[in-house]
Length: 294
Image (cartoon, rainbow, N blue to C red):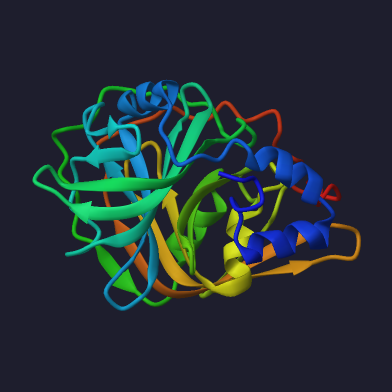
């Protein structure tokens, strides 16, 4: 895959705006449509996978899938199989991210999902790994198999308790979409890096990354987005779906805001139980705003 072809028009526009086209072209060489053996081995060790997909109404969601390691595995050089309910009844674009807090490693695989006898498969179109920036290290405890998931609670705005859930978060996952497909990505920082501006508005600084700008590039052409917050200790998930936009400051800083349209909180959605965080050394202080557009 040519490095230039690895990016859609939105990502290229952001790269040009921030002056990182050369860096992005270099990094883009790491994006392939094949699953290397090291990536396949990493994926098969993971007990969780984050999925970016749109529902039947076109709303974009970021969802957590869990299972015994091997529930998500490569079945060929371009295909993975996931033992979980499919995102829809037919072929659909999806994004996935496998993130391992134990090792601060992550890989992303985007492509087309299709229902299968086991759950669903994804035919890979983009496969790549990211640096460990902003990943908080955690240890994995024994799963809680005795506590079943609670009933999902649906709303159109955050409750005060959910606002505190967001403010306390040091990690969230974001799903975005564009004409060329879906993407699932990760954001991390010290608790408080996500601001709750109202029950239906969130914002966070866009910290310097790898210059790909896949998330911000998608938002250039399609504002739909889905956020996933996880209580690592209890397995409760908080999913938000709405629209997002990024503002660019004069000195290189960037802030992304989400207007919340749908909220789903599911107690004990995940059986996985994790330790408290060992914060990433890359996390900027909360009063710092990124000046480096990389």
